[in-house]
Image (cartoon, rainbow, N blue to C red; front, side, top):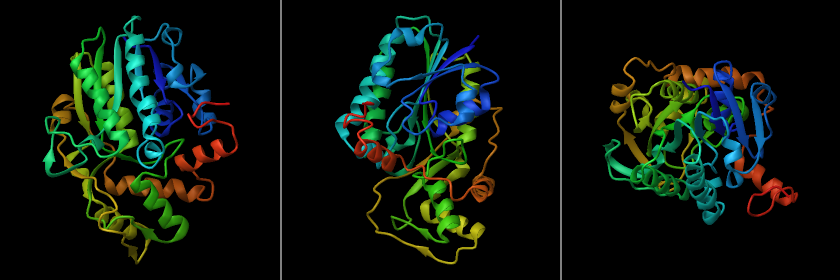
Length: 329
């Protein structure tokens, strides 16, 4: 039975939502650099917070832990493209080190956050068995981690989750994710501006549904190694379809279209394997109620959100609070 969870990246977009939802059910030990200001609600719900770089994790940090949920990585473009070597060091090498250290413990389960970004560009609908075509440094590091996990044997159960593009409200929301960004811009600036021509396709999934699926897999022991696309077939959309829906809900009359080659990524994803693996799970959020929930939350504190990850990192470097390798000074 899983009781004690080490959650790396506990203060991130997804991690903070998981803590909010499940801290009453598990003893969650948070692990985070805390670059993005620890949310007080998150910190009060943690069993303990280890403020530390994932590259410096040791076996002592894993003592008495039953399950590791690994989310502590540099996020996708543009932050992941800041320094490709650094992204590989944090997102890949630190993950390999974590897995190696886990082998020296009695940990029962490892749940890894991968991404549908590994598909990059594909005109056909992709499944877990499709050829991968990562475009960004972030996605390439995800592929390396997946390959390492799948090609090696471990003493603990492993679930790799290829999450669709997340959206929705969380204690530490990200505004560099397309739906969050467009809803916020529509409400704050009364306009919707696309960087691309809107034709690229993406699968989307609400952050709360990701957390719920993680919790289902914590409780489920009917696997040794599992690789799943995380999302639902009903939430595959082009960016322009997303923009039009947001415009409808926010009464925006014009959508500004960007360049045709601004975003090379485009893929439509099949999620049947997830449905077969967790047949009783029902998604809480579709596109409509997910957008409406964002609108409701943003309307309360529209001027207080500034969660641009790259901007914050550059600010900390400029202030010499962290160095170029993203270590605290």
